[in-house]
Length: 155
View 1 (tube, rainbow, N blue to C red):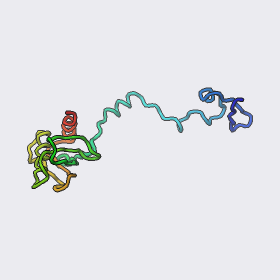
View 2: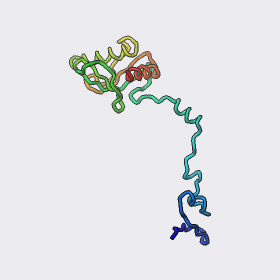
View 3: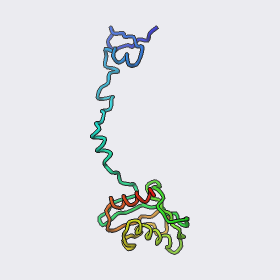
View 4: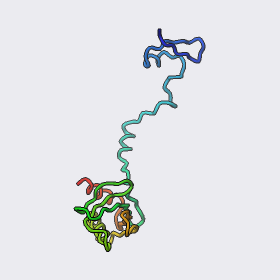
């Protein structure tokens, strides 16, 4: 026995055998696609424009005189390197122990070398005694820092 769709119109009872056939046979608009329940297809041009927009990493923030990086430091590691994003921070491993500011000095030296700037242009703005730090880099723009960090992460 076929299933019947009860249309809001009292005289219209249409057998429903498949979902595709049902859409074509319903006299009502109950299951017809419209602008309210169907997403608008995107054109290839709008998708290319969206893909070309470069998203900023969550650990970078541009300021007036440079860029701030939110970092997570792992001291006493086997080598000095940028590891990966860790939540909203960039994880950095350094070989120095977290004693007498040696890990902080190593972080400054690593970032200065990576970004090609002098060490005095890198300063730790927050978190001198914590693993989570905010490092401020003067004299560079956000795009420059992001490109250098992404290149270092791919190595």
